[in-house]
Image (cartoon, rainbow, N blue to C red; front, side):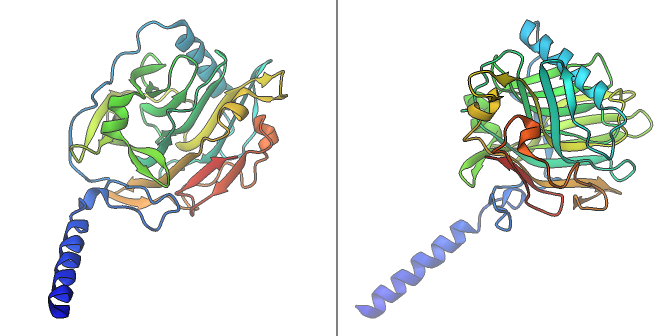
Length: 312
C-alpha cells in the first residue's frame, strides 16, 4: 500500500510539473521581477488588430485633454536631459518621472504597464498619463489615460494631426483580452517599432493574451513633431489642487493605485535588450512627492532603468 501511494504521488507530481511547464514561452512569468508579471516576448507573432480600438470622435473633455497635453509637451521642449517641472498653465501642474531612452540608441521600445480600472478621476481638468511610452522619432505615443470621461489607452499621433488617433476603452473586453494579473494588479504590454526608416514609418501593438500575439493598434509615418529627440517611458500628471485637502485630486483618488512599468526593452540592430543606464537615463534620481502635489508619493527605481514604480 505504501509503495502504491508513493507511486501515485510521484505520478501526480509528474503530471503537475508537465502541466506547469506548458506556459507559452512568449508569456512566462517574470519571476525575477517584484511584480512577477507575465512579460510577452518582443518577437512573438504580430498578427491581427486590437479589438475595441476606435477613432476618438468628438468629445469636449478629450479636446481639453489634447490642448493641455500639447501645451505641456511644448513647454517641456529643451528639457531633454534635465528635469524642470513647470505648470501647464496657472492652475494646472504638469510633472513627470521615468526614463528617457536616448536618441540613436533604438528603433523600437516595448514595456509592460500597469492599469487600474478602479482609479476614477473626478475633475475634468485633471489627467494622469501613467505609464506612457514613446520611442525616439516614433510617430505615436501609447498612453494609459485616466480622466473623468473614462479610462482609456490612447495611441497619440505625433506625425499627423496630433491628439489621440485610436482609443481603447479600459472595459471588460480589454481586461479579458489584453491584460494579465501579476503582483496583485493588472498589466498590459505595449510595443512600438519602426517598420521603414526612410519613411519613418512606425507601428504600435498591444499583446493579446488570448491569442498569444501582438495586435496592431496604430500605424503612421512622417516627421515626429513632439519637438524632443529622445523617447520616454514615464509617469506623468496634469493635476490641480483639491481645496478640501490641499493636495492634488489624484493624490486621494489614486491612493491605492500602483503605477508600474516593467520589462522596458529597446530594439537596436534587430536585437531587444533591457533598457539600461547608458541608453535610458532617469529623468531625476530622487523626485519629491510635493512637486507632484502628493507628498506621500514614492518613486521607486525598481530595476536598472528597465523597471520603475510610483505609489503611495
